[in-house]
Amino acid sequence: MKTYPMQREKTCPFAPPPEYQELRDTEPISRVRLYDGRKAWLFTRYEDIRAVLAHPAVSAETLNPDFPFLTPGDKISKQAQSFQRWDDPRHATRRRMLMPFFTIKRIRAMRPRIREMIDDIYARMLAIGPPLDLVEHLALALPSSVACDLLGVDYETHEFFESRFAVRLDRRSTAEQVQAANTEVRAFVDDVVRSKYGANKPDLIGQFVTQHVETGEVSHEDAVTDAVLLLLAGHETTANMIALGTLALLEHPDQLALIRKDPTTVPNAVEELLRFLTISQSMGVRIAADDFEIAGQPIAAGDGLILPVAAGNWDDSVFSHPEQFDVTREARGHITFGFGPHVCLGQPLARLELEEVFSTLFDRFPGLRVDLPPDEVPFKFDAVFYGLHRLPIVWDEKESA
Ligand code: HEM
Image 1: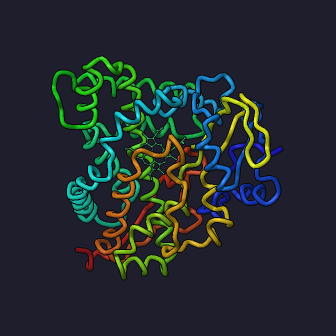
Image 2: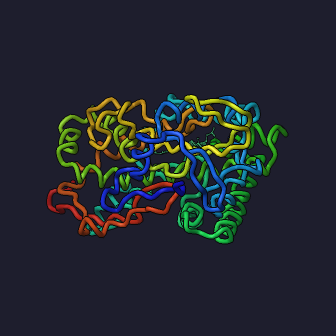
Image 3: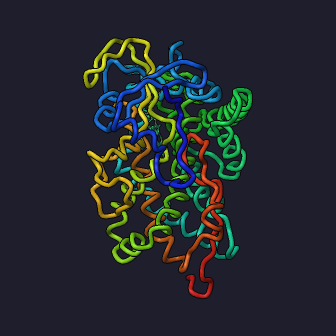
């Protein structure tokens, strides 16, 4: 029996763990052993992963004593109990309160503001000059600024929360380290939420407090928990996509040339980057609330269920030659943002940020290249979200605008 989580291979760092393909061919619904000796079902076919994520007998409730945690730190993080860990109907009720902040119309209206932020970031990078770390100066800087702007958090505090979230998202962190990081972030976000009382602030946390907390509908504690989730989800995910996406494009110059030649292809290229890289390494974990059957396999109430979206995105019966990074392919059916009731709430925002970066970065920094030998690029093999610890870059200064 294999152990989960499996690792990506250093020799093929863009690909998901090779065991997914192997299992898909031999035993697409298989038993795996977790760190604490418990067993769970691992699904590796696209159709099965989607069917389970959307199944009414499947629960996201992490307080269930049989929930399959992946590491000791994972248990501490997931038991923090944001609405992401609730089931419907209470999950749907809370999600409906947040949805108005993430409609496509509302997010599109943020485009000019995001363009300004990107311009400021590029101006700072040009002023510093090469070499610099793209992760720090762009990949983290943009989503952090956007998340702070959207939520109403002071951007000056970004180093504080980024460092605490980094501990939480490192699968090697101990339960005590994750607990300490969580406590500090929670105290910080608690202050942010308190600062919105009686102020009717226009930002997301401000409006959420005015509309749902001050009316008594949502408790202060719950508002803090959900604000922590939004701050975390709003920056770390997109940051990893920017860093890893830049590297993937640089390593596939033919594909980069296509999007530079015709910028209208960038939205499709972003979908392919989301599919190809699938940075969500530890998401899509559930528990069976009732007995059910899937593809002929009986599942019993209380069984742990692991639905790695990266396995689905590299299922060659859905995406032919999944190992080929092809910005022209129809990749929109990918499940990088999950599937079913918990599908990512922030996906329009992530897409907007990625489109804006990848349609401008390579023109503003001509000759952009990685300033490290390929075998020294530090991939985040042990993180909840896959990405890069740092990406030193250089470019041709004389030509940059
Ligand atoms: C490329 C960037 C992103 C990726 C790959 C991503 C991925 C995901 C995935 C896979 C899920 C489902 C998890 C599950 O089923 O267990 C999810 C849920 C969620 N995401 Fe994202 N996300 C991204 C960006 C964002 C952003 C920018 C925000 C907010 C500002 C956000 C907010 C959320 C929230 C609130 C949920 C929970 C939804 C629910 O449980 O109903 N995400 N995300």
